[in-house]
Image (cartoon, rainbow, N blue to C red; front, top):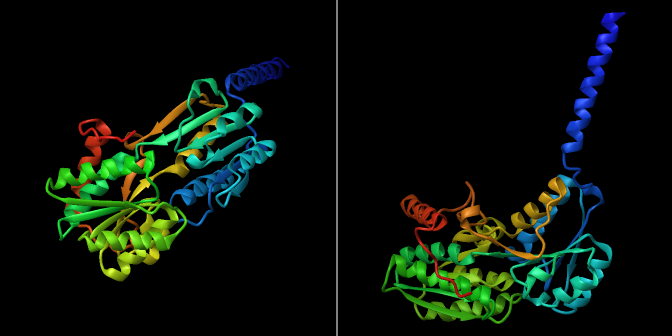
Length: 336
């Protein structure tokens, strides 16, 4: 009888301990009740920036069971689409500068959390339901420029931008610095398509740069950049991809894409919402800057099935430079 009583007391004590542990553990969020809406200004299918964001959101759905919605604005109705999304979702994630009216929308929907990708709200500190995420794309572009200059046989390289904007020019600044780090006498030519959804414009821009002698051309133009790859394949020069590993996402151009600047948009979205789900962490009212030191910016060379145009020695040199950038030994210039 005494033994049975002792066992009961031990069991009760253990239950009490477990209960205390449970009280100290964050409650977390029921992910299956969480609704997330991803909004892009044009459409998905660019094989780079927008598709990277979608990949991260889809992993959240697969891993945590969130409800995922998407909106393609088709170049119109940016504010209205944000408002529509805020009516029905816990998180609204607009991708790109086109959603500049996000602050006024967030004020109308204080219970909805907004994650603005690649841009910063003026006076972000006064918007607790907005988190801005920006990237040190100049760091990855530095490595792309270094590779381009080392790979060039004509002493001329190029870059095609989607538009003449702050983020694109940040790429251009890093690209030029990296190229000159490799070869101070390299010729660098750039132009802007003025469009992110027109491969024909990208092709035309790349052809113009190639006519000037550029035999390695970096594309920073979304779906328009796929035209750069087309020109490279037809005219016989090399190209560098952006945002995703485009030797994989645009594998039909694997023979001309030598590498890509990976900008882990999808991972930054995934990590932000995962932290909210698991720890109820929300860093609203600030700008989070993602760089090479955190693994959000890198150079990608495809997979084991991809054609490798870059030598192992050059890859090793690039890896060494990446460590210096991440560690602060090399400071990459920025246009911001």
